[in-house]
Image (cartoon, rainbow over all chains, first blue to last red; front, side, top):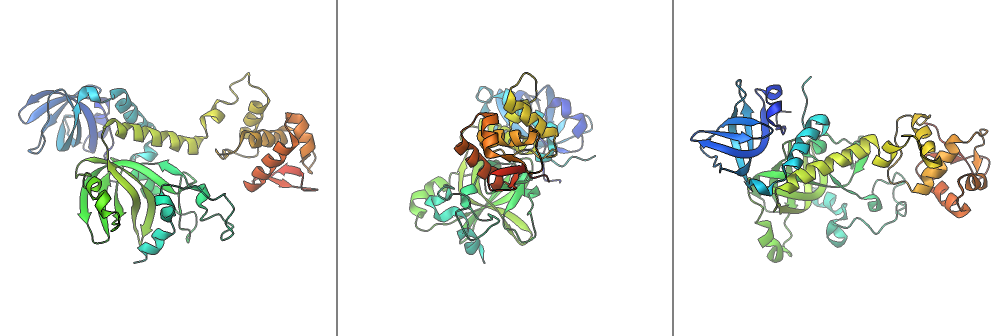
Length: 109
Length: 274
């Protein structure tokens, strides 16, 4: 199912290279077209024109994992100041996503 | 369009559709299979992938099954990809990261003035929570929603996905209580449950809504040595130290679930092996 965008964190990048994923992380650096977000590790992302990231905000990114494990952003949603998000719950969601993929995405064998 | 027709078969007419209660299971004579007994209505948190994977138990059934459990009302949280205003409904396209599904909210002309304001608050690219029923129309699935509301706190997304996972595990692996059984040092009922799990009942887990008394009675019949006539309820009552009336009630419940059957008389029961 190409319509699913599995929720991942940095350690899963390699497993999902060339796939479209969903990452909820904290914005750490903004450098023009490029940014770094923290989601279980640093992930460098390439922004599109519509993405408006804010430092120290939580952001949800839908994007494609590239060869070098950077992520090309297709859409981003601001989730407000990072303190407002319980990242333990976010990590738990990523954990169950891959523990019980039958609920979350079509796993290719 | 038999949409309206379909819609009226939901519990929408009963106090705004959020209320599944009112009927006792089995109190409706119309369908022995219990196909439309709203008394059994549940509100289950799901992912969109589960809705897309839901299946009909038989070709002409109207209801869907998720994890071998009947799904009636469902709720989920997703990101609104598209909103399209139709004459009779508003169609939202929701994406929760596991799949995409259309959600239709019927335009209620009477309620328009009151609710018009709150409805407009669901915005494209924002997250929203939906309560409704899964419908199939031709090959396409959608959710006929009673309520769609924007979420205020983004933690609700994580909360919902974790809640849906708990419910999924509940149906596929049994309730947490039955998983903890057999961890040693437990008393009668617990041992009985353990035995039930390796017993002839296979790995089919007990229905989660069974009463504790029914569980005890079932475990007792399961583990007590007996002839093929089964056990009399008096005997069961003394063995598990329960009032005869409670045993009788539990027996009725177990028969209703098809887990035991009567043998020589109405009050002698044996396990129904499947």
